[in-house]
Length: 83
Image (tube, one colour):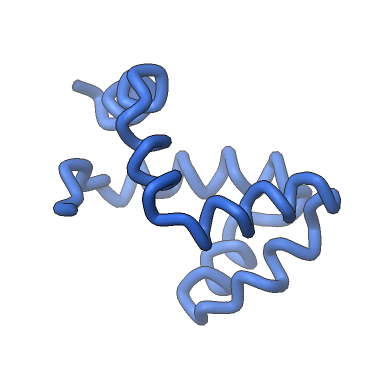
C-alpha cells in the first residue's frame, strides 16, 4: 500500500501536539520517542485498554488498512492536510 497522505511539517506538528495532549506528554518528547522507535514508552502513558487496542491494531495490517479506508478517517486526514 502506498501512502496517499504526505503531511507537511506544519501538519505533523499539529498531529504531534494533538497526540501529546491526549497522552499527557510534551510534543518534543513524543517526537523523539517516535523517531527513536521507542513506542513502548509512548504506550506506557496509555490506559491498559488503549494499549491493547493499539497493540492489536499494530499487529494486524488488515485492520490498519481498514482504519485508513474509513471515510471518517479519510475526512479527518484531508482536513488536517487542508484539502
